[in-house]
Every structure is written in structure tokens, then in C-alpha cells.
Image (cartoon, rainbow, N blue to C red; front, side):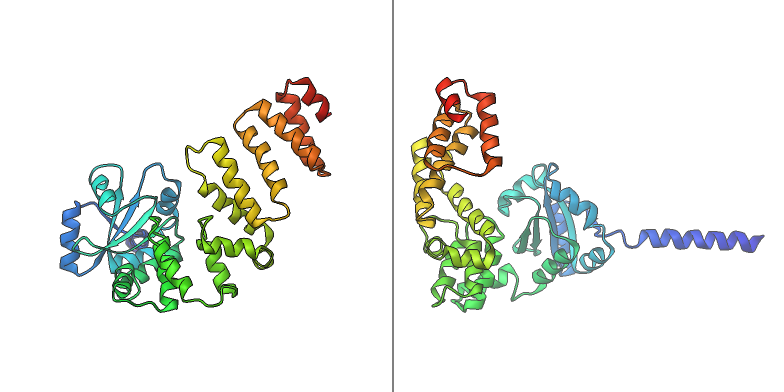
Length: 326
């Protein structure tokens, strides 16, 4: 009987031990000053999960990534780990100090309080481990690459990698590096450079956007029409000031469509006005723009025509426009 009891107890202990292990990343609850001191004493970097309570990806990482056994093994061995709400307590000041603009921001900080490396956005478990490995690489982390750049290193491969890293900081600091990389490239038409341009072209007046517009069909062949259209629209939306007047909006849209679509530009601009007025809930101008557009550019897309007819039925009261729509 005693043997049975001892065996059962032993099994329970094994179960408890197994549960205690593999609990993922062990986060410290000490103050920031205490954590800095611990980092200096242990000669380790600090991993900071900079989050906000309302952030969905932050919650997903806490639930699915930080709890993974292999993630915990790597981070507990190599870092002192801290979760910091950047909108409360000490986090408010650290958010300013570390220029946190999006959540989650994943920071790697040394004992002197310097950001050595960083990432932004949701990272799956393997991606988070790769980010941590990068942080531990003194030549390849953000601090190391900043030092190489400051020393005048302008190797094309380095500039490409450094531009990607700074782009992830979401503070606009990548643009100078992007421009310097493109200056090293004599042939912009390689698949690698076209992919680089697709990622970084975000200014309607830039040479990179001109390259997309001038070689649109080649980009569509390489990346697909939908992705190229999406990129052009992204640049277009990003070019419109927040408080732009209707005239300013249409001027920007017309110029971009004319540049990217020399033949279809006027039709696309005309169609944009329909969408613009519908979004603005300006029924009269929507109806006028729709009638003018479909009179000039007849459509055989029945789903589009049915959608327009239904919108007219629900919102438009002008009898002349209704008769035209019918």
C-alpha cells in the first residue's frame, strides 16, 4: 500500500515539475532601474515587450508566442525579460525615450539604457527567436549597423539590409538609406531591385514611383496586377494631406493616375470621384459623378451596375438622375 502511495506521489511530483517547466518567457516585475542594474550584473541585454492593453497583436503574442517552451528557453537564457505597458507608469516615459510609435514594439536594451535592436509588430515564435538572435549579433544588430553606417560603409548589400531594419522602426529614418542604396544600382530592372522599389516607393514625386509608373506592365508581370494597383493606391492615399480640399484631392489623384495609367487615367479618375462622393455621403455630387462617368465610360460589369442602381434607389432623389440611371 505504501508503495502505491509513494508511486502516486512521485507521479504527481513529476507532473508538477513538468508543468513548472516550459512556461515560456519569465518576465521580471522589478522597476526599470532594478532591471538595468540586473542587466549590468548579468552582462545580458534586456528584452522589453512594449505593449498597450488595447493592442490585439500584443495579446496574441502574450497568449501564443511568449508561452512557447522553445521561446522561453531561448529568452530566459539570453535576456532579462520585461513586459511594459507604454501608456501607464514607467512605460510612459520609456515610450518617449525609446520612440515607441506602434504596438507591439520589441526592444533589446543594454545595461546603459541604449536600444541595441528592435522590431515592430506581431512575431511568430520562430520570428521572435530570429529577432533575438539578431539582437545578440553585435555586428548585425541595430546598434552595430548604425556604427557601420556612421563609419561610411556603403556596401550595397549592407545598405539594403540596413534600409529594411530602419524601415521596421516606422519613423521615416529609412528613406536616406533607401536613396543611397538605389544610387549604387545601375540596373533598376532586376527582380531584386523591383521588389525593393515595390516595398519602399511611397512618394508620388520620387524616382522610384516614376519607375513603377513607367514600367507598370513589367511590375504587373512580376508581382501581379492586383499588388501593383494596391501599391499605386497606397502611394496615392499617402500623398493626400489630412485636411486636403476636394480640389487638392482630385488634383493629386488625377496626376498619379495620369502618370501610372496614361491611357486609362481619365477613366480611373472619373471613377474615383464616384467613390469619393459616396464615401463623403454627398448624394447630389455622387449622382452627378456617376451619371457623367457611365455616360462617358459605359460598363458591362453587371455587379457594378447593380450596385450603382441600388445606391441610386436608396439615396438619390433627383428625378432627372434617377431617370438617367434607369
